[in-house]
Image (cartoon, rainbow, N blue to C red; front, side):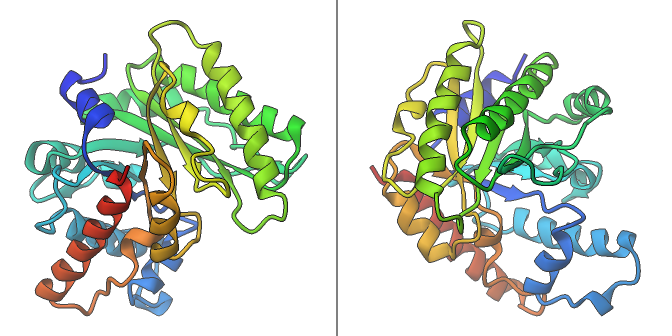
Length: 297
């Protein structure tokens, strides 16, 4: 069963969920934005050491705490490492009051019927067991919608909910993330289809089941407001999806009941060359701005 105190923090906490889960494919870009060029590391192991150092620096910043950051999504290698002298998930909850989640997907299949489904996850049960032992509260898995295809969106949502049921079986809360690409011409149409499809799948869940949703900031304000009030939804969070932090915050503030779960927009402006004072000041201002956009309305 999910930790009751953590569940209450996610349901009712006055804050947002930080996404610190860049994986192998996105790590070089994240490091480059942080001021670490690819010639600074010679192997994947060195690369992951550097990204973990960045994540740990963020998590240990004074303003990164449960007053404004209610949750954080971790990459598997982050879960397996330490922050502040403790295993990462336990450090976040015990020292910062931040609920830990784990990214569990293994990347995307090639585009088909306007969507990119998740690759198979044959080791998911074993990973979920490890996550429970590590003190993880929930999971996150991402797939992508590239067109307003009704059949493609049905396939992507069905896959998300099917895997979600498997995760629920381990006592973890799944964050279901069917991302809509922000640059597509039919984004609004895709979002309308996605709303209807998610609602049907939520209605089909067994009574008492709860999941979370992570959705792209929509073209129409309050597009997903009905989902925030669904009894099977613990919380709806929004991804920045490539929008700048200012644009992501502007859009988020227009959507009542939804809080942020930003990745790139969270780390925007941070640099490995900053002093601790400069770094903490920058992340503090970022946390304040994302929190303000999350709690408005």
